[in-house]
Length: 388
Length: 155
Figure 1: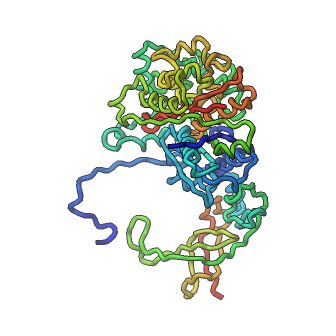
Figure 2: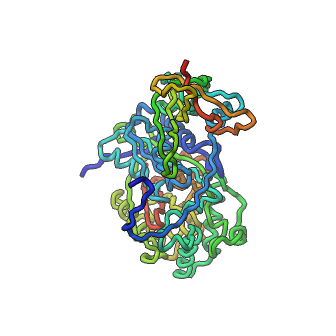
Figure 3: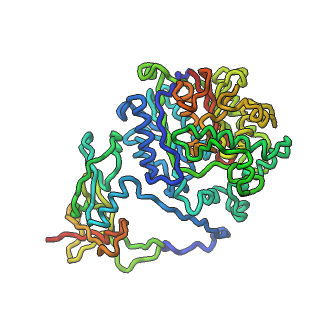
């Protein structure tokens, strides 16, 4: 099968905030307008629209794809919502990619939205609705304790301490201090601050976790012949991958995300990458919890198993390190409006690879980046590799 | 078998509840739209000069061209019945003694779905005018229910 080259040619992003005045439709419209404006296109140029948004329960309205369609610019256009939970934000550009790569569309709008503040008293309550009603829900599970179980297993398997892991939260929240859309940027945060924050579900403390947020992000994707007319600096989608593991917690390896590895291998193969540690210059792995960044770096084959904390300790993952990780500030710092947060990572690669990331710009004119998200029932990996 | 009658041969089942409570923001356009209903008994639309359409309820943006909409217009409180239905069954599936009528009332290029009553004996017909009846100002709280119903204009 011959696939066409696809580029990202525009991007827009709202601020990520605790509770937005704007409705989800209005947030979507703002991001869409910014993305169109960034590449001087109008809705007349857009041939199809791909929307990503996570569980319906967050916004408090069912069939969110339909609800958000006007803000997403879907009026009288081919339109589709994709949903793989937390993995959605990096899956929706993949969906946009195959719309264009297939030859069916030349220009596609990709948009991701989440308004998590609607759920009351806390967005965690929404997750109760995702678990099996007979075997799990009677125990009232929430994501905090589900994550805590996985984090503990990861720590035990490789002898990793909470302090090793807290460094990730510090790095990302410090990076986010340079992001104009960030909710929790903090230039002065320390490892002690993280370790001393309240325990939510041991070993998870409050500052190990990304904040509930509202926000939207949009990208414009174009086929090669159109992209070159729109911009001098197209950023190419070089590889995509996605993979699903068993939905049973009890049936998979909690210390190592095999499904992320498979998604990464699919993307590396497509991009022709043989040595990811040398060929990937910037990484935006999914970091809803600080240990997840480490977990994912290992699954992405960018660190040996159990060795990701050492990369952080050695400064390799700092913005000016050899392999910058979450130079955006990640979910921990910028915020975590679920689907929008994943697409924010892809937008970050776009800005970084064009040299337009401002105070967040990683030095050395990076050539290639990788964004990854994770979610669904905590067993999906989605990966996008972009280069210039 | 009526709506609420259960099949005695159905498989055994158990019940659970998922408590879902949401707090919604009105949004940029909604803040102004509902404030006009609450404070002024006015129904507002927003006009797109590019697409020549007036959105009701007022929207912050045009869904066709994505332009920001800054031109707000009072579309009045009388609209046209575009279509209607008579409801004979309650929300919980039980039978109503008297049917309730809901209608799509056209205002601007959009309109509202709302309850419709006829104070006289004239039956509801598509194309008839209907007027919004508001709660007293002391009881209005910025809700679509600040409009009690639309009333058919028969004369």
